[in-house]
Length: 228
Image (cartoon, rainbow, N blue to C red; front, side, top):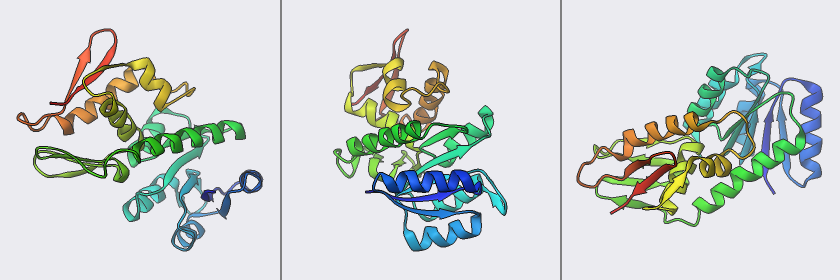
């Protein structure tokens, strides 16, 4: 059973989501604005947050940033009518696990949530800490440490891509497999989207020439994480 916090000011959608998720056996708390969300975040300690962006007393993006600073151990999904790429990217950069545009089917929401939870389950099978010289990875915490010992927080998708490459280290992983396992049926990602995430990961993992985790490009295929 999941402990879910719904942050949604649209009453019909809030009621529908709450009743549907409770019917699946999950615990649900529903906040209609940012003030109520802050109170429920502290009292309910949710494991999943479904966050609208346009709230009557604030912005869901700012609220998500606030929550991520306090805790990182929850799944965050944005549910918004705003479907421009800039807002989606900003949401993912905050650390959202997914971004679903309204209107959406309830079944789609559950499928995406289950995919995220399945990915986290795979991460939980890895060691608590993985070290390569000064470079460190904490998959469960969504954190990495570069060669200068700076601790960097990864988004869920950055962490999931790194985890996929790490579990298949020294073997090529094609872009289509990355998209299928990380995004599923979402039409938003493309090969270019994957490439952009790899650029971000390289900024961390290739900071130590002696102990670098090199993400090697495989022409016309995808990527390979070289681990010595």
